[in-house]
Image (tube, rainbow, N blue to C red; front, side, top):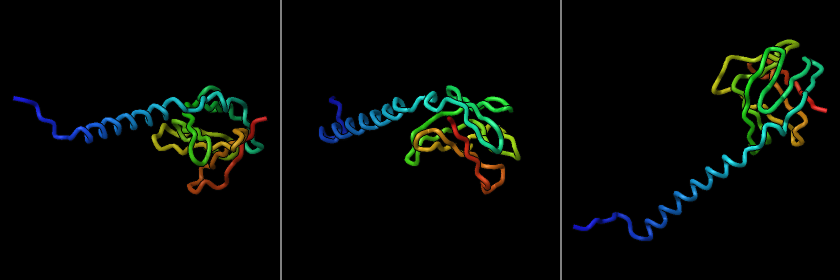
Length: 130
């Protein structure tokens, strides 16, 4: 008794090429992530002092929060493991959250914006690096 294959030779070739394309797309996305060191520095705002970014960490008076950095269609974006917001004159960290908002950098990566703790993100606060 022989083994039968439900796909024609052309169908098997198409399946293999599809699998290879998906693997290549996945590998490209994993290997082309920007280094968190590209945004290292001290970012200042007149409203609420300094925020230090160092090797994938937001460092504030309240402590450290890890972030991942990704190139998105609207710009370089940091995705922190906790929400980072401005409350009064302080940068605060919320509880760990899987849906923390991204922090978007300017095109030259010298400025990022944080929201206030209000539900509508008003006002927004700009932090700039020299």
